[in-house]
Image (cartoon, rainbow, N blue to C red):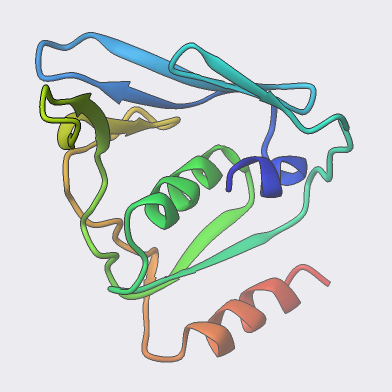
Amino acid sequence: MILGISSIIPDGNILFFVSPDGTSEKIFLKKGTINAVGASIDLNHNIKLTNVPVAVIINKQTGSSGEITALALKKVSKVKYFGQNSASFTSANRTFPLYTGTTMYLTTAGVKDSKNKLYVNDPIVPDIQTNDPYGQAKQWIDSFN
């Protein structure tokens, strides 16, 4: 999901997965490639849109990977969040294969954004709490024209 919007995210560290013992794994973007938890995915392009306002609309339906994607946008200089608190699934999970052939998923880390704020199943709180996030976001974006 982050690669899909990578043209508006500056290169560099964008998030960290932070384990209870304090160790962290960085997620970073560089020239159209995202590197996370020992793996990398290349988008095969490096087009960047800079200095554009980005309105992020969130609410209680924004959860898990949607929240991680929203947190990745914290690195954008002109970003503002509108709506209601997110669902509070801000954590990283790991799979553990069991001897029976089934798989167990466990939450193993919190997420630290590029502003150094740690989320461990905490909601993302929008900058503008509103029941009209689209209208408020449009008004904010229009203020740049």
